Length: 67
Image 1 (cartoon, rainbow, N blue to C red):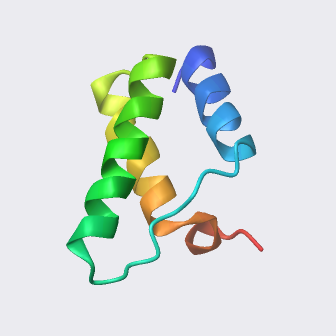
Image 2: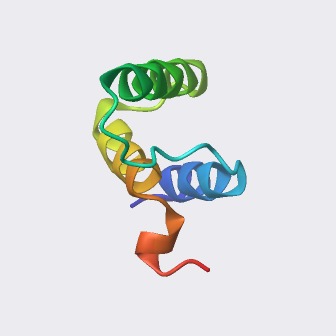
């Protein structure tokens, strides 16, 4: 990752964005995806980073050694 991507990931981790909790409710999942797309569009995230950031937020910080 380059410096710009590192800053982007740092910014995302500090935002305390809502993670998807895995409920089997397609409406909640669709709403979560729509919300994340808006954030990615505003921040102008490259498509390759959308996948990485989306996966991180979808799974939640605890999966990656958080609290």
